[in-house]
Length: 573
Image (cartoon, rainbow, N blue to C red; front, side):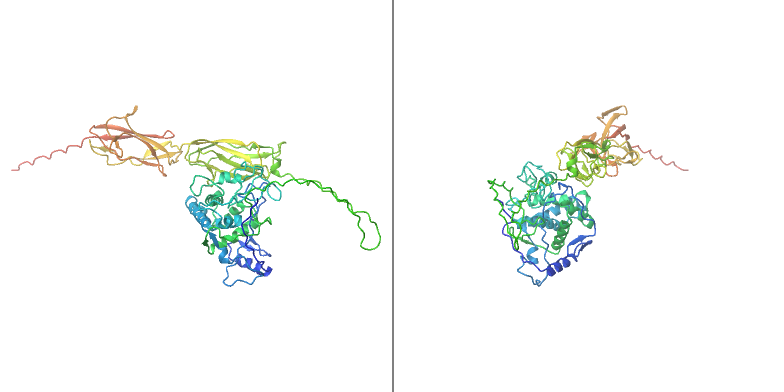
């Protein structure tokens, strides 16, 4: 049985003049760059809309339908309308308690992890309103999970994008086609890499508002977008659902919520009712297949008599059923395989940006390049902390006129070793291309002391100066380079010494080898204090780093010089 958005509140129809005035007044308070057209629809100064790929997988929602209701005006005296409005401005501003909490916690998390994004929680609220009516007015349990699943229409190409099943029905219950899932309406293929555990229960559930809100926030903050910048804000919203009307609707609610909201009990939020696909809401379960019916024998057309005068009484001919509508192949459907497009060797030192970018070309079976195809680049596995520029592990790029898609720059993390970058065609099950990338440890090729003061000590004492060195690589500062310091027996014998100077551990015990040392951001390494036992002589401290840099420092332990006795005064005559 197909369930809909509960009991809908019926909105009275406003007159055209009132509606236009409402939108015009609202638009006057929009963020910079937002205006209204002649029909009162909001537009942006930027070229907001681009042509999405036919499969719709370049967006969080697969460009699924959304609610188009605009927010009401916050006026102290309601404007007369025809009929009774469904809710006043104050009621529309109410957000269900659990849903509101999820938005604020997600924005708080992003302010710590991606402070440059400047994500306002009101943006999550605006998207949540447009996507699901704030989880159907807050129809969630105490943990934030929707009481019944919220599913968009089947994305089978019949009026919507055509996205074949990518999750085996695990998220959307449909093993043939994908559907947008949950209060923030993620399609399964996007949730697979963008999903988050926002409530800390160890699961990433698109039906949980905490998980979905955090995932939406991370999705909007990728690519180093700064959402305080109007152009970046527009780009982020359009990446969620690629439609100018969608952008304008979300911006309207964003500005509305910025003016003030309040918490209402779960399950009591107001519900929108106008959708971009003219339906009455997302369903909660896949629609059952229709029961086949027995075909009936068509009746024989009866002759018709002209309204006036004589004439033929021959029967009206039965119209010929139309044949199947021919389908135009999309660029994606013509792709036969991926070819490498000159990707060089992928190597980088930990913390550095790779000098090469992964580049592939989409081609037909005949080898012809195909433009306007979405290619997904994915850093595979959890054994690396490398990312693309912007901190993401997945990037989708549209091929250019030469059929080439170039991934964003790879940035090495601190984990060394090899990892895979996998390239696939979005919306197709073609064999992808894998590229091996290697991250090597940070290195130094030179070590020097930062002081030329002689290092001396008396037996049983402590050295006045601590040893400090600076590491460089190819003349540049070598930061975060691993190092080891050992007090050795001699220049020809690097074995740890058993006498002479030493370090102390936390318990005061003698230590003559220090490991797990690391240079700081300026390439500096300052060793702990050195102490001397009762052995006198000249000793050596050897410091080595990853990359082969070595420095040997001389230490001297000698008894304090005995002062010469002053001569006795001689008697004078």
